[in-house]
Image (cartoon, rainbow, N blue to C red; front, top):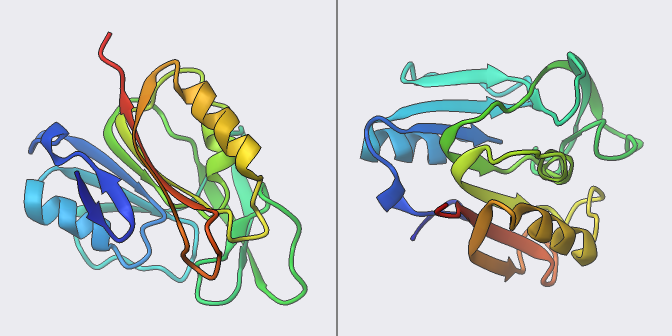
Length: 191
């Protein structure tokens, strides 16, 4: 197992022919690591309209990842970006910039999905009707107002268990929270 910027994944499941989806790519550290070490295809998505990508090897998309059918969503930006969110998550804070951003719906099938989307992960994972990737490295953002609580996280674990094994589940104290921040690796079951 390897961890890059709080995202754990199994390198042995990646090859130069792999397809990797980096959701919440701020800084591009994860995407650059994948390209530098595996040379595989990386699509990186971030909803923040201020994010720019200079690496021509990365297929960068400025969009809000959604579980719904919307073509555009509102994106609320405030702070340093680690607490920004889409309207799907919760209500607007009193001070923030609001942008209308195109949406992106995840279509199967990826070798690795890294999901760091500040609360939108709940809806995306809850709405899954089939596996999306061989492995998914997911941060559950219980440190933001988008938090759903441990029972919802456990419900998501149960829902995903029809396809995935939890290969890593680390509850951490990060981003100002005491212990309610998860870094979870879901690995597709062998059928």
